[in-house]
Image (cartoon, rainbow, N blue to C red; front, side, top):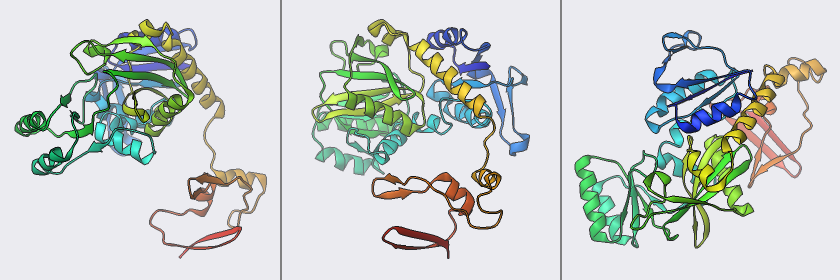
Length: 359
């Protein structure tokens, strides 16, 4: 099996590639800045690397700076049909925008700080008058703690607001959660947190990021915190992800996610070889995808088994999937019914029975 890492060529990428070389037949490190994609009709789309047609890979691990988020999304969308990719295409849009990140966290019922977005500067000013201080003001885009500002009073927040208006910069406002200038970085790989560290900010600095001078030390997370980190990564569509949390008075809350987490700091703090964990997971999932072969529609499977006929009614025996108070139908039911989101339907229900029909 052949694999590639598409990135900016960081130390973390090289460590991961080296670990993958003991498992895959070949591993290439590709520079995202040398990738070109033609986005036309699906049959006409193509990918080029350094002016040559893109090689076929069984596994592609694409990651990089938020500045290349759109390109990473396009590349992932193009390659995901034939290669295993640990990060879904829309994750590069969601995670690289803090506002979209918090919307997904909210929809997935994942604890996070209170977050505010206002439509106008005047509305922001009125909001600032009502808040308890200190507060956090953030640019929607940015990593490594960049674009994060703190205001300990209404006067300080108003000054920041005036500066942001001058720069014509969008921003979000968040409550400040006191943790003694510490946060937690958890590395999620698949369904596990493979390593975690507590980051401690240097004196006079509130940001605990390693790139901002923070110091990391190993930490053992409880089961509840691990579940929150894994759930946050899954909500974003990432099998490999760094999840940043605050251990606040009300319990752990997610503040940010990183699709390209640095591995040097967490290895130094914990001694855990995260690159090897990532390599083994990529190999396992790629092998599963190869062995599964091309996907077969539920309708063809049923017809091959002689259940029902090409045009008749099919009966499916399955377990019920409850999501809160809602019933989620299995994918095969959607496939066979050929319902679309534009269809109007009628629902008839009583005890032990639900019938859904096109109107």
